[in-house]
Image (tube, rainbow, N blue to C red; front, side, top):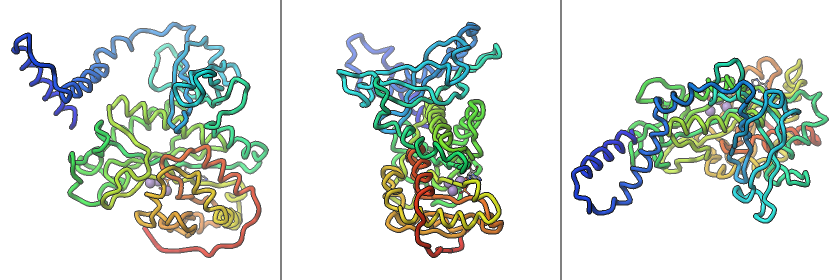
Length: 414
Ligand code: ADP
Ligand code: MN
Ligand code: MN
Ligand code: MN
């Protein structure tokens, strides 16, 4: 592992320095880099952390971590202390603000961005033993005049869900992610500067130290999400070694975006604890035969889940086909590197759908076809896609005009 090498390097360097004359030459920049990382590790010393963790929280104080989405789709957060009565619901939580000029979300001369609380979760990173819970607060962003920021895709999506509650739109989002050493170039479990000796095959849903890299992270994320109150429905190891997946859902309407976004925040915090780099890039390794990472979006409405729903599903898929390019435009950056028609994807150029076909843009599961009702899976969104944009766009398209029939592309695959 990276750190054991780094620690060894530091150990030998510092013991050498202990015996060196006072006028020892300046440390090399390489050594400085090692020192920086190893010094960072001290903040993870369990004994140090435990000392402060054991301090009780004052009963009248709840810590609220306000989380928002920045200009490039990453989550950011800051904490404030609130009385329990205020922390009880989004209606009593106060709005807050941050310096938008530091996140490219506002000009320096009018830098305030307003944070509006939208959804409360429990904070798995600051558990307490007095029966109360600290909270994570999913917020969206506004100008002081009350206009949603351009990067506030939640407000954009919300308009398609509002008034369509009778549809009972359910989303199940499959979030794939890829883990790396802190060098950000070596996927977890890969040899530095090289590739695994065995090609893809044994890693998907795998067990064993030679196959599954990062299970501790995925399992910690699982527990943290359950504690937070996120409707996480499962986890599995993915096809590319070092790649993992979890699913969130089914969630209703805008809540899918809120839950997925908060789950990403939790994922990044867990990876921070493990000191492992995580990327949501859809094709982190382009050389060689390695799968990319997606955010498959499973979708159904009430009528799709009822008797005869398969016909409603097909009509919805035709509508998606008619707006293929509009969807691709918001389904994530770098997605063209992933949607090649290989590695269980369809080409980015053409829309297709099929029963049990993992090489189609949209897949109808075997069970849905057999039962004549259920849901479908849009396989196009990339792992870094904005869940608010994806869910909002699907909702808007399926509420839109009828579209011409498309012939299914049914290729049997496991
Ligand atoms: P895959 O077979 O593509 O890997 P997963 O099991 O990883 O699928 O994910 C399927 C997701 O779809 C889960 O999050 C699940 O909760 C969700 N799901 C199940 N039923 C429905 C439904 N009727 N509508 C929307 N999503 C659903
Ligand atoms: Mn899956
Ligand atoms: Mn997957
Ligand atoms: Mn899938």
